[in-house]
Length: 215
Image 1 (cartoon, helix red, strand yellow):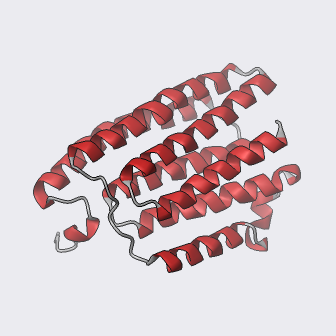
Image 2 (cartoon, helix red, strand yellow):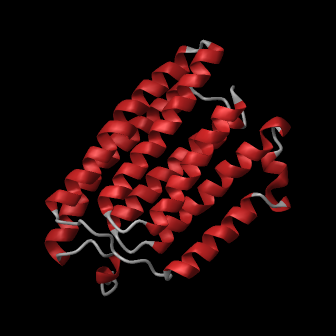
Image 3 (cartoon, helix red, strand yellow):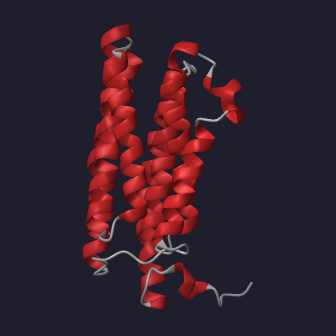
């Protein structure tokens, strides 16, 4: 792979995930996820060009359709349908959020995960970026109060797992990747119904409104 291009794309993915923590509008969150997914598709297309494997080409095409096109359209549709122009707040305030993001980034580059990021020594820096992005995606799910933001956090986490697997040379099983894309497609359908039900019942997608729910 072209290491300069790969590092640029991984850095772009990392920055879009950091942006999910500071964005103020849901539309920008949808766009950030689309850009992030496009970077993953380009990485897969680059793998196809280098290896000539039809697996990478098929996965890239499926990713383009589902992740770059359908998922952002779904998110934007939900934003318009429920008038969710602005994001729900976070549990941690902005300065504290950025401090945690910095700490997670440092952890991803620390000796703690050294055995993991040195699976392929030449890809150590790229794997560290992918791992940091993965940790920050988990923090998006934890820190954001809005269901839309948490959904994007989950989708971003999946992108980071794909990127890490790609550069750690974990076998990209065609059946596995098709299964992931298919599950995302089904998940979008289920999430549409689920979000509509939440909004109809609570009048908001702020998950803190649901804390009074009991078994």
